[in-house]
Structure formats: C-alpha cells, structure tokens
Image (cartoon, rainbow, N blue to C red; front, top):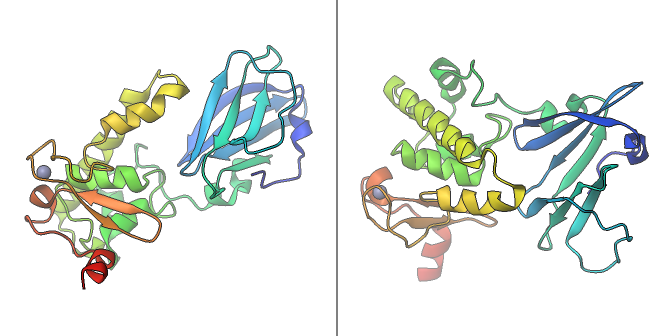
Length: 258
Ligand SMILES: [Zn+2]
C-alpha cells in the first residue's frame, strides 16, 4: 500500500503531528520536525478503514490473512491501524514533503464546500460537457470528494436523472444542483463530526437516502428505489423523484432478460 520511498517511513520517527486535514478523499497528517514538515497522506479506497486504538499492541503483527495494511504508533502507545477488506487492494499511503507530490491530490478538482465553489463555478464546470451528470459528480479531477454514494444522494436531492447530460443544464437547474451538493455534503459532515472512527461507517449508511437502498421505499415519495449495475459499481435512484417515473435502461439487466 505504500506508494512512496523517499523520504522513508522511518523519517516520521521523533516528529510531532501538528495538523490533520483533507483533500478530496485523501487524509493528510502533517508531521513537523526541526528540518520542516512531512505529510503522511492516505486514501482508504472503497474497502479501507481506519481504526483508532488507545492501546497499541507491542507485539509484531503475525503474517497471514489479516486485513491490516498499515500501523501508526504514537509515543504514548495510542495510534491507528489502516485495514483493507476484500481482494482488491486499493488503499494507498504516501509520505511526502508536500501534498502536491501525491499525484491524486495534484490533479484534484475544486473542493465543493469551499467558499469559491459557487453557482457560477459549477456552471463553468458543466458548460459544454456532453457527459452524464453522475459521471461528472464522481470524477475527482472535475470536483473533489464526491464519490459514488454521495453523487446518488445529491442527484436524488436535486430530483435529477443520473443520465442527464451536464451540457443540458439550465441556469435554474445548475443552481438547484449546486444547492443539493452543498446541503447534502454539509449534512453528512455535520452528522459525522465528533463521531469515533468506528461509528462513521454506520452513520454514513443510516444517513443515505437512496444509495445502497435498492428495493426500499424512497423516503420522499415512497416509490421503490431502483438500481443500475455497472462492471464494478452500481447506482441507485428513485424513478418518481428523478426520472419522471420511468426506469433507467440497465444494459446488463436487459442483456440478461433477452
Ligand atoms: Zn422518490
């Protein structure tokens, strides 16, 4: 999972953690020392998780099928483990002198909760882009930090089809989408603030209205939430709220039915 080798991880020893921040989906810990700052940056990917521990075991980890990917120990015996379930190993850790040295951070689009991400900024992003809005919202190079789950939530809140073309948005629709992005993300952050790392995943799941809720009733209108599957992901939506009551074409499903 470690994507960098210079500086080595041993360069962290003796430094103090002086700041913790976020860039899109990357977490960034600043480790300060007499010779300047280093940044320990990590991306949990889909199956990765952080587990804070008040009391780190001092025995070495036994090799084997443990999901443990990375262990960070502070001098008071606390620390955290990064774990990754499943066979697809995508969790990534970087130790760098500047966060821009992490390729995924250097190419991030604008932060949607920043003050300058206004309706005009969103309009400029959508203008002339002949791609589906679902893909635009998910693309970290276009807008930072909205993934598969929250793009479903944003589009449900905005009452828009995931297949709607970005270039087709009227000024009113851009404003509605902007409001949906900001309120959806702010609500999620507000609900999660102050929770222990162990409780975050549960909170994310209960807070979602359509994503991962296939076959359940829409909390707004009661219609049944539907799904479209792709090779390695799926999207969920409410036909009544988002697509004029019509189910979206699902190429995989229709191929099976033929
Ligand atoms: Zn609905």
